[in-house]
Length: 399
Image 1: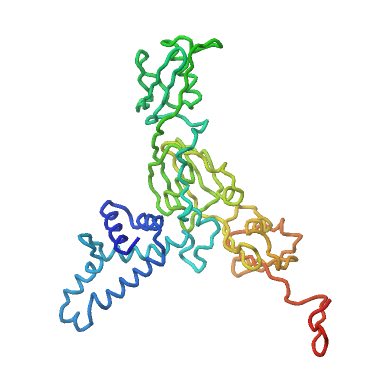
Image 2: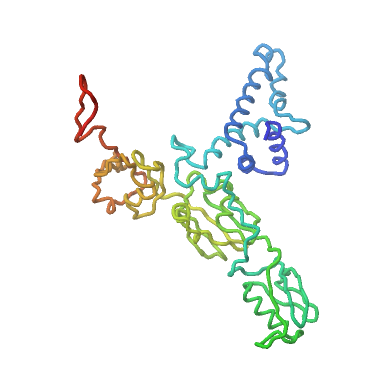
């Protein structure tokens, strides 16, 4: 997007009532980079201090220029973007474009997994060609298609009403709300046998099949430690991952290992996103239902590992997980890592404590919140080398 397109987009979305955070997330998904916004911000500040405001003497002579300067830069055609929105938008974007990680310290964008929902290449949108899940329950707004063939030929297409019924000629209302597609298929076969002969039994001369046409929309509440909490309208095929993506992912202190799903005021699932990120398990990506509430808890145990591991960064741990588990999360030790022991720095009550954990104790050393782990490298020396130089035919290092 060009600078002018961005200004116009922001102006239009602001007039529609979109929040600044939501606007920045949408710009990110449209391909607008942090570098582009930073460049625009620098240009904005330059024009404020020079070409727009003029010199100090000019400002003294004409103070009204100060009042009009902010809107002058932001005016694109007939669209005006206020100074406050422009400046705060760029301030906000600096943090929201850093993978939704820590924004309060030097280690921004280094918490493992926090960038999964902010990547432009990963939308988590439900596939339009997805087969109807076997446990999908019909509800108001779903379109059902009932095909009858054989001795009798007919097709019924109806949308389930808010009361949970479809209207069928010669039968009246047929209640389908809350039934799975398989249950509804058996039920309509029984009901339709009242007006169609030969639908039941081994010698049935006609067949009947119920399928799902256009699926309904549902509303899901996403709350807790997410970037943009709120209520979202989604496809009834949507899953937990879809909802978290719509909400911009977890916030800087949000947990990926304690995401709770509530249905009818009861907790129905506690999801650990590491199962998906590290193992590819989709069992945690549960399908949502209307009025579900998703609550992302704050992190409770965060550790930092650096040095000779394949993926040094911050990791969120669960109570009771060991140093060995952390090494697995970090991709294991690199080839030049010193494997005999690992140093752990821990925050004590009044000062820091240092632990040297031997390789035989990795499994038994339990980590706590705030631990700093450092894996050293082997020495840059040789145990069995002799170097020969000078007046010889083949100078060099030899065993």
